[in-house]
Length: 203
Image (cartoon, rainbow, N blue to C red; front, side):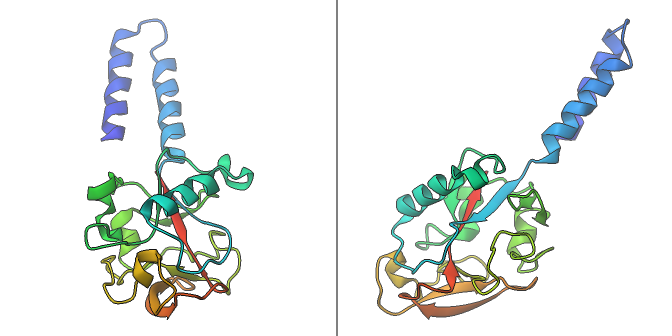
């Protein structure tokens, strides 16, 4: 739709401008390139391993917002909304982010360095990435490639393994192993503080 809009603008400017018919379309094309070169949903980590007792939605979303303002990320991540990539209940699931939080489904999923890891939300959620999290520098340490999600692979809330929705050290929490292009799901002790991270989305 964005391309169609700009194409229409180009035609409009070309028809109504007598002195610089060629210059206006070129300017519009430049704007188009700029707007689409870095559009997307940015995915990034909190930067260090964390146990599963990281708090409720409000708490983790705030952690993600604060992390995004870090000097190492602030100039590279676009978007006004920050959302922790984790499910908290059957009414707050990763798979429902588009409906619950107005997350756009048609934009590419990007690393902070602008590398595209999936063409769009559906492509990202199908369990097959274009590039690994470590290769895209989303996760710097290859030994920490497991991500707390409290979710099944389809993005649904895991009602059994969720560490009390981020509030309890008892039991196990579901995580996604994203060390390869095709990620998998498993569980880990909620108290694990050495090998799991929490991801964030910005859009």
